[in-house]
Image 1 (cartoon, one colour):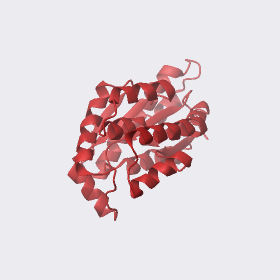
Image 2: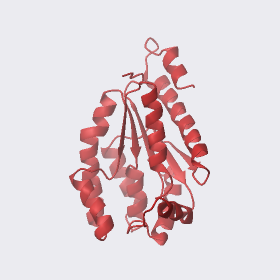
Image 3: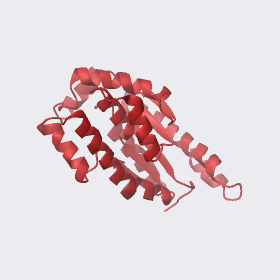
Length: 226
């Protein structure tokens, strides 16, 4: 598998439920796979011990704010140590369907201090090279959830999601991570096309930043300039 980017590339896809994060994440991973690039696709909460507890709470009833924050951080620690950092150490591209911005937004909507959540996560876990924030109105997100055959869970209450969206839109100016806000209310082909272009731009920028002049090849640059 090809590994053209020293130190790898970490892309986080964020946004409220129904924004299309899973579709965009799969699109980026597929593009990498078709070109033989070493790429890992993951999501949070994970299917590991702590992530399973969080997923169960979405159906059985939400935990306290302190319990949620504790489980998210435990799950992310396990995720980072077992998947995210090892992938980056292998110069792989890691695409995440949700990361710590979701913790800041969703738990922030419950009263957590958003800046404290950002500071803790950006101190203890890998910083994304790019956050793609998929933004759309809450009502549109709820409609998409129902169209795909699901019913909104306890994390997807309209009032809570409205506050989540407000926080998400504040995060680009509060986080250390570079972010681009993408209008996710458009047809998914347009959204995916824009996200793919932004992903390739981030890859080129990381190449210029991390590769030595001797190892920086026109072939690698051309790959992400398609």
